[in-house]
Length: 252
Image (cartoon, rainbow, N blue to C red; front, side):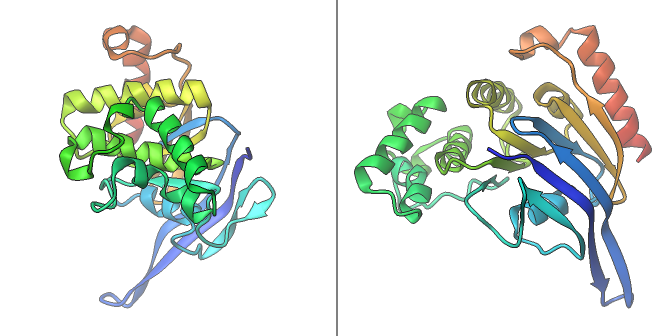
């Protein structure tokens, strides 16, 4: 497992309509230690997803560098797993086959990759759904399949781009609790993008607040774990940290 380093990261687009450059990300430097859980928040258009897509290798940076351990990121790779806002599952494959897809692409034999897939389905509470197809599952269950699929590839870093935005509020809270449980058990390094301040404070060890492509603040979240919504919703510490982050986001 390796840490993640962003050094003076830049992303510039050319606006053909206005005939000018747009700086989506400006001089972002960030160090994420192995096994950390970092949420990135900020208003729409501040560069959150752009940063995640550059770390994933989907977008090339215009300047600066991204390192996983000592290796520079130059494109997508199995060391970085991605969970998207859309479920992005193969509808013609069973749940087991979806989760086993990454190990299959790495050349792992059928028996071993199915064993890996069943391990992560059990971890995400989906062992009973292994032989079902995505259209037979609820939205929350489909997103858990997405998490299991990303983890089954044993990535150094798990990148999550607003993965719970499309589910209802109650399911979202359950998924948030399950994600913190999985993180505590396996300790993957997680970079989680969200617009939801409460979600960020509930999940993370650190909340990075972005404003106009720059890091505005890096807030330490020292709430105890395990985190359960019923325990935190009335917590003064949770309210104070949420208020602090919300103030930063609104001023961004």
